[in-house]
Structure formats: structure tokens, C-alpha cells
Length: 66
Image 1 (tube, rainbow, N blue to C red):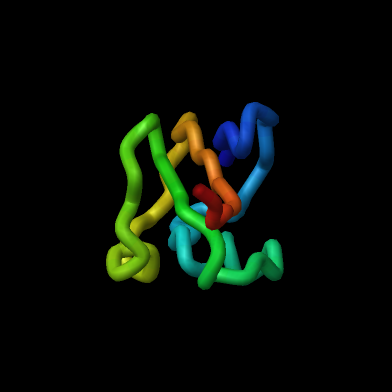
Image 2 (cartoon, rainbow, N blue to C red):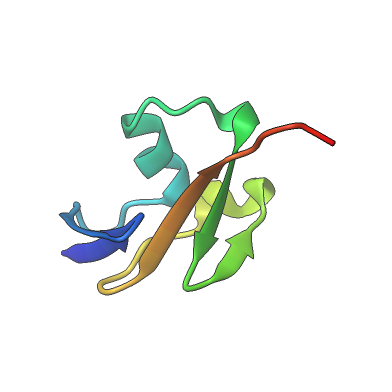
């Protein structure tokens, strides 16, 4: 199954949750945010959010500043 991840086409397993996808990328979950089809997905929903064919996933690093 294909999704768009940060602007690039990527082949992933079916029925993969956003939480597992992020875990497989070994990303630090405390410093990132995820948006699917331009809508932020709250961290509390990552475990139950299943990625589907053609979704556009963007993961951002959060940066503090002023």
C-alpha cells in the first residue's frame, strides 16, 4: 500500500497504525507532530489511527523559540 510521507511516495504494510509507523522510524515522539491530509492527528489518537492507501502524512519536528 502506498502513502505520501513528507512529500515522498512510500510503500507500507496494510493496517499500520500511525503509532507503529512512527515507532518503526525511531522518531522521538516527544518532539514531533503528525498531520494526515493536512489535519493534525492528536498524539492520543496515534495508536488507533490506521493509515490508508493514498493518505498524505507529514511529520514535523517541534522547535521552541520566541
